[in-house]
Amino acid sequence: MKIVPQLDTYPRLVSFGQTTLGKVALTGVFAVGLFVNHMDSWIEMTVAVALVAYFPARRRLLVSVAALYLLLFHSTWLNWEFLRNAAKAAGQRTDWTLTVLVSGILAAVFCLLAAVFQSVRTRRASLAAKRPVLCLMAGYAALLAAAGLLRLGGMMRLLVWVVIAVTGPYLWYFAYGLKDASARTPDGVMLQFGTMWPLWGGTSVPHAKGAANLRRIETRNSQDLSIIQLKAIKLLIWACLLQVSLGALRVFVYQERFLGVPELVVALHRAAVPVQVAWASVIAHFAETLLALTVTGNIIIACCRMAGFYALRNTYRPLEARTVAEFWNRYYYYFKELLVDFFFFPVFTRHFKQYRRLRMFAATMTAATLGNMLYHFFRDYQDVSQMGLWRALAGFRVYAFYATALGLGIGVSQLRSHGKERSGSDMQWWRRALATAGVLSFFCLLEVFDQEGRSYGLGMYLRFFLRLFLIPV
Image (cartoon, rainbow, N blue to C red; front, side):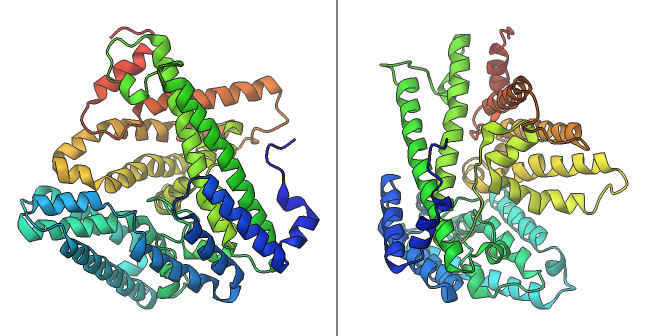
């Protein structure tokens, strides 16, 4: 018995979705789903997705056109508040001249990327072609370090921070583009542009990954398109149900007229919070994070599927995980894929080839710990601007502790399951329940340290964690 009906398994509904009337009906239901899920630009998204889906011969080109439209008229992923504050700090104007400056620098960044992309395609022996992502990350890290260390002022300071602010949100999209450029048959620059924050949206983590993945998952006929669009509608229904659950959790758990449990960020700063309240805060925070991530990912992937791409879900049945590694794969799939593509495989394919267990553990720690830390430090460039490089690095120690514990947990989980049959339905129910409870407890408690603030030291979080187990500090 499924909560959401398996619409894509109904033959008549699949056949109806291939007719003209059926396409209109599916598009209308999709639009209603976006509206119910509180998407602001639901009309524009519906129109864009319909054009991409129903003109398959020009699908990838239309994705690029839609991406350009979003960049020009809905570039909400650029941090305009930070850009205006940077202009004020540099003594520069914040009116239309700032918009022109940002637009010009963004255009220059894209032109530079196109030149590098072409170089990677044509000059295979160059360092940029052999290690394109490493060069990209090293260049961004050097620019961020220089901005945090050098005492720049006036227009020069503003220019540097604008370059960082417009490159940061696109960083891993650029990485996937350069990775595809080094392939044997990459897409051209115009089609690559459609993967740079595509029309279905996303976060700093690319959903549906890059151009190579889009080529693999694009639907090839009307029947496949109808099936995947029905799956998209299922995801929107599921997202709506989860939004109701998320709203209920926030009302009944956090509001004073009901349970009145403080949010975790508030409980962390209370020295004498009761143990039962601390536990309730941690559990509620974990549940809220899981629900919010699932809702966001479902809406993004629903739009991608409606456009005709069979993208995998970002969060898929994490409560069925029996190991820490399996939960990580189910919980945030596209972030895991980013870490695997750019950190795990480079280590796994080059180092410790004679030591299989060490090879796996080293690659896992590189991805889940080092890659995780680099991703979040690069993403939070605002902290370097406000605090300077050294203070931002020092304030990062709480998240570094979290990433290290996460890497160790996943690495040990993989070593324990290496060479063994995967836990499945053949296990006794109580063993499955214990395994799932252990995995959820690990990630729930780890959420105490999954904090992005830079103002408090690790000691405060450790004291809160120890109080959960009645250990006096």
